[in-house]
Length: 144
Length: 145
Image (cartoon, rainbow over all chains, first blue to last red; front, side):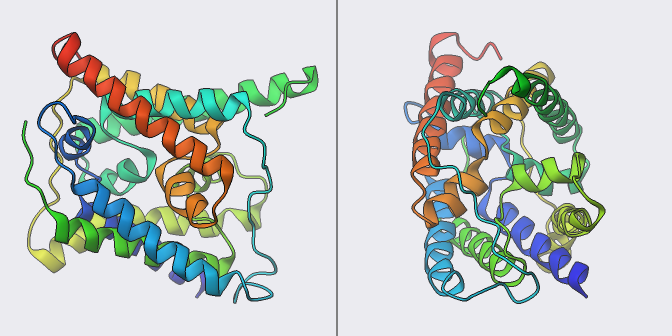
């Protein structure tokens, strides 16, 4: 039952990504191409998603606990540090090169489009490499 | 490659993404961030933490099939860049979201919804980086990627 619910949530998310146009690199890249073939559609995706989430969280996070789990797992890091800035810069560069972000690529995987498979394979490789490097560097005093 | 301006469909898509984010938090207490969910699926910390991620990702991957059933159309995936761009872009995205602690869904939607300072900074930074990157690749080095 739990997994049926999480499956449905993934389906709703993926459907939103597809309907919104975020699974289409041409549309994503045009959103960033302000000086060229600009397509502002994705601002509506962001606006809609942010509006519903901000409103929903206001009610949800006021409760003592989630309906089917013990606690709310919320990120506790507060500091604006170098990994945040460097990582986010890199993410933006990669997004601007390929036109896929993780949330755009994962639902698009279901199309079996070769470009999506290539991107996702490379992205997973990047995540795994970075996770391993991060865990190796931690004992040396690097903050992450 | 020009694309059509689709404010209504995009707004509808955004509302669904928001709905999924609220449902995941309300029921399971989790942030609807694609990066975090995927990373925990790839490198699980415990058996009990893996099932919800696997099923949620399975739902995401099934979305094109549902879209086809509902709309009668296949999902549009137009790729105006090379395979090399997909590989290089994918690697950089993977490393970047891991160090940055999230992506468009985790920082840009769920984090900003909580008014997290880290997420606000991250989102501004990756949006600017993407705009600058597209400007460079399309208008300065002439679509070389």
